[in-house]
Image (cartoon, rainbow, N blue to C red; front, side, top):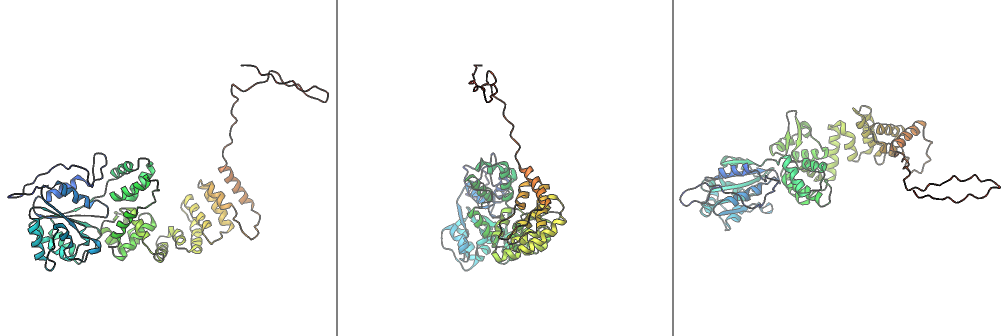
Length: 457
């Protein structure tokens, strides 16, 4: 990072001390050193550096690192979500004075005269007002500026194009590698099993904030499905800046819980890929970068919206139609779809899942043959417990008919499968007392048996 010059700029890189704002994982640190080095190189001379990324990727940490390594005066400011309409607020917070708020040239000159050879850092530019955005290119002609921009954002008009045209460097914060994320989870939650660590890394999708928040929940005794309120609020704020089709597409990914063909997501996939929230491979399969973000998007749906989206997904993804209809509260339709789909299921496990779902739907009484087929499928899939459960008659006020021979046979098979193996009798120990002689047979006129005499081994 260049130091503050006396006559002309002089570049000098200094080692970083301390661990302020860093997530240290073994011998590495976050954010990546090469990203910080690229920003340092771009700020050797006056110019504008934009650090962009999804929520929780460490954009603000990059700014702190830049401020720590700069030899000179650092002016730190930023925009606020609740005050995004106040003109020049991010710049006023940085230079700690009231600035002209009527014309961009006057604002740029006022800031330049105060920053001079220092470093101007502006965080959360996605909430900045139009006047601040308009003044940044003119300020960058004479001063070093580094800003962060969350994606997605809601900048007015063509503000992003203005920033890209004026930027010396546009740096995107990459996702945290899986091995580094796993090391961070083990550092925060040492007692987490390998399966839990792998699941947390998958859900976080390379977002350091999500990795640390989810790992803290596990370390505090929570389950991996728990969500951190602060992290959820941060993600929800970013999702609010998406247009409606993109928010709906992200929520659909959360309800599906898996990647899906991009065409299923509709027109919202365009903005999701542009903001880096979703990746589409060569086969046209769309997957969220962070599954946790998709889960938050699904959680933000209103009850009526959730039902409507489940019904829509039931028509778009036939293989999962029964599950989505059940989630939408349409138990009758879900029962019919599950029974029909079970006849053409590709595997024994899938057939068992469909038939068990049909038998467990609330408000629907499954037919006896469906229950029997579900029990046989569960037994074939290696689930004897589910087999017994589906065959156990529920309490009812109506008289029950006698079970059929096939039902009894299946139940006996399930019982044998779930019955624990018989315990073998333990061999007699060396200290077991042994009689010295056998007791004489007793009859009507015989004397009582003599007492047993124990011998010392």
